[in-house]
Image (cartoon, rainbow, N blue to C red; front, side, top):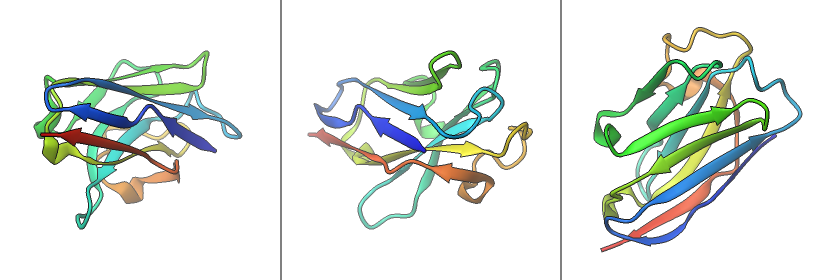
Length: 126
């Protein structure tokens, strides 16, 4: 089970940190990712992190503003979001890949992830 939290209403330029707590499955050997889905749009990749935390990937649109991290002792992955834009209003989802998967393969594809959280809504006001 993946439980995302930390969403809310924030003004443009503001910051939020999302958290995703994982339970019921092995966490520390799974790559993790964040996706988002805006109203009327398809789900899109935001960021991904290897099981060790040593390797991270970002969508071009969020590079330099978002930071993904994980704490394997707490079974939690985070997404620090800075300088948020109104067009980034969306439901943000955390997702887990298969145990011991190579993150570099297919990390941007939602079908590469096997477990999904329920999502947390981020609303950025203009």
